[in-house]
Length: 252
Image (tube, rainbow, N blue to C red; front, side, top):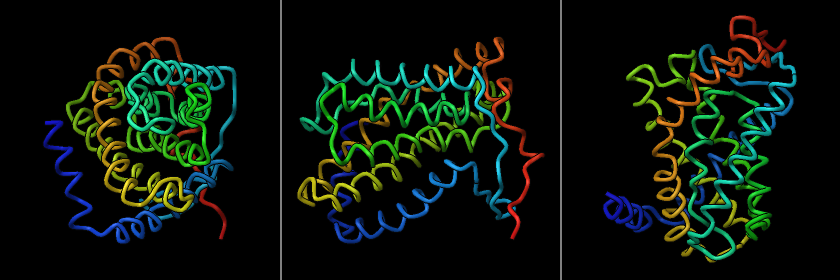
């Protein structure tokens, strides 16, 4: 399976020009960055119905603890897996994906921000800190954010429903496409590598390493989710964010 996926990704630049992939990345990067900035100020984009809402959030002790725990665990896994270096100084195997994906679903926005912070700390500790680390922090933020937005309810993020397992891998594949596109587009803008290396080596490497790093995520969620519910630490229990039913649309 790994060989087949790698062959497919290596063939992609031959059928889609590097210029076309770059332009696609620019188009994807704009809304991804704007959504992140909006969430920094507690404004959230909703699709059904299309609107922007002002979220009511409160950083209590539980929320801060979950952010710190997510960041620490992510850094530890990133450091441990750093021995599997793909591109010296820039790209390592991402074992931390097995917690970054499901923690966004289980703990919500505190874990999402913890993942973003962890990427910068992890790069600093592993000697990979570079101008591209900021783009890495953005796509790391999206690792948790996609799951935060796509999962609702304890049975969903505790992987007690069959559909939750299917959704996990579907959302992970979505991130693999968006995340690698965003990262490589910014690498190209920053001229960190020649474009042929970015699109034929780094692009498929990010997808492959993250996918296989996060493949055990549902099993992690199956253990951590119920425990978080039991101790009042899940997104529904920690009191960080009000339910969707009480969101207020932004005045126009």
